[in-house]
Image 1 (cartoon, protein in one colour):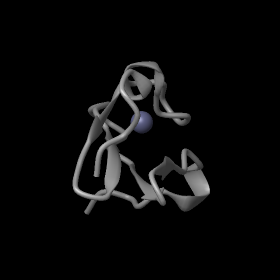
Image 2 (cartoon, rainbow, N blue to C red):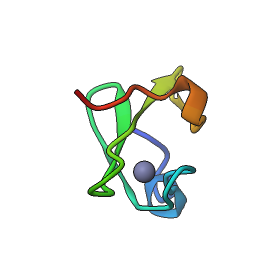
Image 3 (cartoon, rainbow, N blue to C red):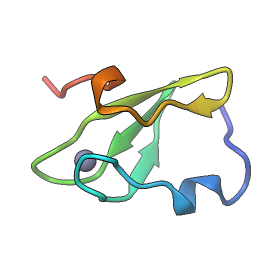
Image 4 (spheres, protein in one colour):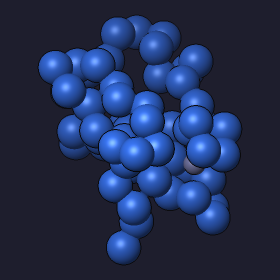
Length: 56
Ligand SMILES: [Zn+2]
């Protein structure tokens, strides 16, 4: 997976506004108390808390 250049820099977690890091097929919040994983569908990040996977 590769997001459009520069896109990752402007994205932030909608729940806590921490930066996101790119993972296999997700964007993972780097916020210590948050850590939500947002799905990426067809190259488009779905930054919805309702769609996010909660950390284990
Ligand atoms: Zn977060």
